[in-house]
Image (cartoon, rainbow, N blue to C red; front, top):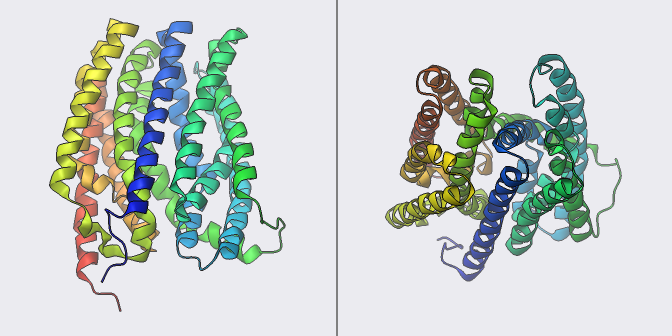
Length: 410
């Protein structure tokens, strides 16, 4: 007999707060893309989104899956004292892995990206990685404690801080190539807020090496899954940056994809809300009504297309070239939405390697299709490749998860 129900008050309230957060996050993301277009130009939008794509991917290396470990163990911890100890060890582990990543990434960028227009932005991006990693740990601590209101507020504050940073940069006449510093300022301010909100009662020190090692060991098994999953949402833009190398065209595509990513967050929020429950009882997946979920997703997809059209008319009609790629990606997300929300099933079940396997196969499929289709179809090929990867992802999760659900835990 299950002790949790999808329609209970706490879950519904937490879900509502997170959707409010995602709405604000989406508006903020749209705001700073429109702001860059108005204050600078379409090329600046393309450059910014290329750097942002690298930031999303490299940040997963910096975090190294430590946040997943914190979420897993905090969700099942017996009391607040243990949860705080898990948080403390997670933060120290994240600082260690992120510093190594910053050092390595900066060196590689200087060697391999010296002919790219975004090299300076990438180096500035690296400065934000330690703060990003620590923030991920704090946020997953709140998620594991099921403090979803706090999680929602801090999650949307990140985008608000980034948006305001861009506005301030423009007001002080900062060059377009330096906009990437907004990640540093946004993450740094968020870290300060999270520290004062979450760290009360933490006893800082390096006396719990076993706890730190536990997080790093768990993270080593799941970080690749996170890396390739984030890469799957950005591999199209990254491939365009290497194959097409047209900042204006990439700006058009990335602007359209921004709306698809906002739509994708609808599923991520639901995933985030049920993750702690999967760690306790895998049968929770049977309480999700697939048909209602698909119908609601479809209505939201049409709304997203309408908003994209309206905003494009307001900002620049050139962005309407991204309509077809957007529609293709939205269709794929709707078709595979149920399995997208179960994307962390394996890590929450204590089997992160299975999640890694699923995500690696997905991103390799996406990469191969992008390399083949972009030279032929351009941005339309990038959209088709991304859409195909979601179908592969859905198939992998469905096939393996159904086998696990049929087994009876002792």
